[in-house]
Image (cartoon, rainbow, N blue to C red; front, top):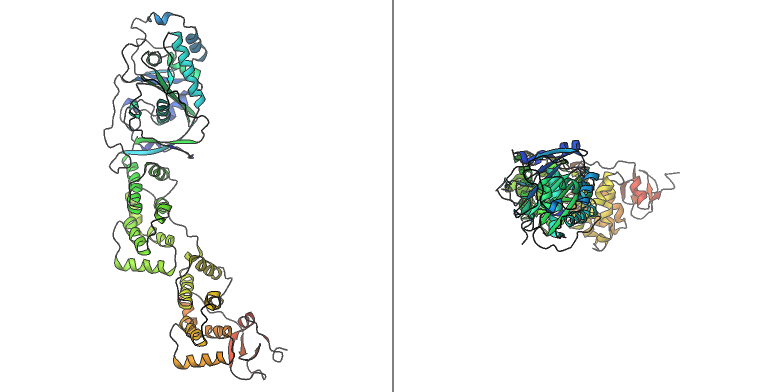
Length: 577
């Protein structure tokens, strides 16, 4: 039966490894970490063994070994330095292997007893657990690991011991252990558990670092009594090996079992892998982890999944993302979008997550008005991010707050967006659609069109035309948009008569847009009325005239010359000679 395996293989590459101060090393000899040591010992590495020997071996490389639950009947050197009768038989292959692939190194003994140094909660998705998930990038060389089996069985054959059979479960455990050794080079895993906690099949382990080939690592193990005891243990029937590159160093893990192997291999050629390695975290690192767990609970309403938690945690711990970045990933995830929350529910979640409290009535009302006007949810999210409350929340978890970038035109200028949204409401009688709101706000932002021309676009859109408004209803809409009130009887009657006498609707709209009332409306949104030369148009003609032109008969309507020309009027032949 397989024990709890606290690792998941991810298809991703990270630019750097997690900082070493993110996890807590125990205050014992066995928690020594590798990077600096390995850099100095790639050529001359050190060896550790769990088995005491009476004399130093000739090959001293960076190796550790442990036998877990193995029988006492193993072939090892005796105290007087002699070997067993079996060992004195033909040793040509083994001796040649050691001679041709030996490297100088340092011998260092491991403790006689192995023990777990952490008995807390192992589930790192639990906020009360001291375990954090570190994503460590690595590349496996499966063919080199598989070559170890051939060499080991050749050695065992030389000593008259039955061959080992490859086991995929032991190989999987070895893949984890090799990467874990790049973090903590020890038989105690970074999470404080025994190496055998990965699988019940594991009864022995050899580990090594810095060896560049299967031949050199087997030679190193065979030149160390404790490691040799594992390789020559007749009770072992199965094996799994891994060779993992991490930060330019090869880490090896050789796992042994007493049950028959399954003969299945993990496929070769996988590049750019990364593992989630469980390690005991510092108090600060656990706080960062709990910030992410809280997002799962507050935003998505569920327990964190291990892979997602590991990814977000590592983005924060490495400084690749800020609190605002990570929270935004939750609020705008497909999972949250699929909930189809109302604006009110969205604001409630923002308050609970970003402020850690319920919404106050006035604040909630203000945010709902913003969303109902047509601003994006990202716009509202940014408002919460930039608050003092979220700033203090991030500080309490020891992370940078960060900021939010707004990209949609509707979020760039409060006044312009509110002006366009008002046109949707008063002219078309509906809330704005996102694409239309972005399009209209964008043309004003880029000064591609004036506010009056944007209003013209609404009044003479296909949507408005389909309403088939009478002259009276058309005039009433003009009053609501440009004068911000309902039409008075006298004014309504006057404009309707002008339309019925033949004045174009386009001219009437532009004429009303030059009112003082509409100018005040524009200025309330931070906009200015369009200025220009005033000309006059009539109900019956196609020409625009200067003031006092002798050809003008009947009622006239003042327009800006650019507006008059845009709707088809041409200069009078008399006053514009």
